[in-house]
Length: 450
Image 1 (spheres, rainbow, N blue to C red):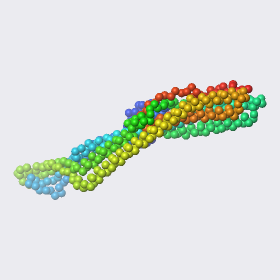
Image 2: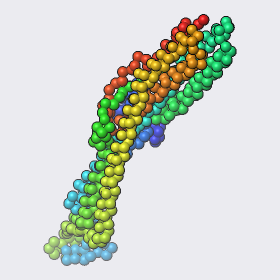
Image 3: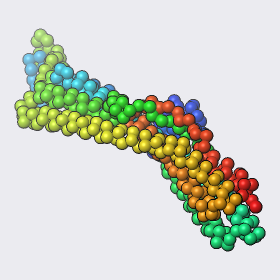
Image 4: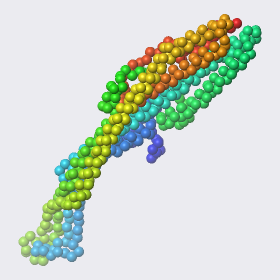
């Protein structure tokens, strides 16, 4: 690992985790493995982690006394005294801040460190949300490619049937051209979707701090969870657990302590010192105390007489606290609005999933089967068969889009709340979009072959 590279994995504060490094370096088909990977490898998470560490290291700095002062002086012209000439002196001084100053400074720094910790948690949640959204989009794209390919195979079986009927004079040339045009359009759609996959993979790899060319295999398993709480319940949980609000609340408290500290800055600090004077022997050695070195204890205070400066500091801290309080109010309102929006997006997507899987797709499948039977007996036109096939394709892809939107909205809600919201697992309908076209394609030729 090169020294001084901010893009390298891990940090000096994570050396104890090197043993478990391999556990976080392997990706499988589960969403949990991607979440574990990004939490350890993301430079965004690492940045927030180091910011918290930096804030926590402020505590031992602010709770310490100021450095003592050592003074040493030499008399260029010795001072003659009764007991002898003074040659040099040494002094030691220590300043003691006003009562409560050090404690307030430590309390303020502790609040700042807590705010940085909650910000770190918030960044983790945001990064996880982004990864889950990227996975949902990628899974949707893979499902859309698979469904479109299945429909391409289904339409290919239609072409075989139309060719066979055309050879025996039971079909028309326009029908054959129409199915070939339809095949070309679906093939172009497949190629377009496949060409889009590398950009989706690159976006996911960027979040994972990997090379854009790193492969992400198909078949990622994502849960089909549906929230079981109301928007009001989730909003209340978000107000209680959101690390964003908790971080701002700690900043408000930090500013409140800062106001107390600004007021105490207007009180004097006490400085205690001791001085030792080196004295030579007196000219008359018989004098009492000849050559004795005097020791002097000193006391001093600073004089905070420029009151406008200190009053302005108090007003500044109050304004900062009020500003941070209003930011907390605004963030709470925005969080509530975001929760309600994400809740609507989730429930609306769930409604669409159920509509497609339990109503529209089964009906489209039934309509396609009926059109196949009617085409075989000559009771329906080939255009009807193409329309029902196209409808089934659109319904199937729309169902996967709705499922992806539902999962993305759930990821957003988890990020906003600060912990997983209560959910239930969706029971996949037997006529799921992923099974319909393949089942029909397997029996198409047998049903309509003349």
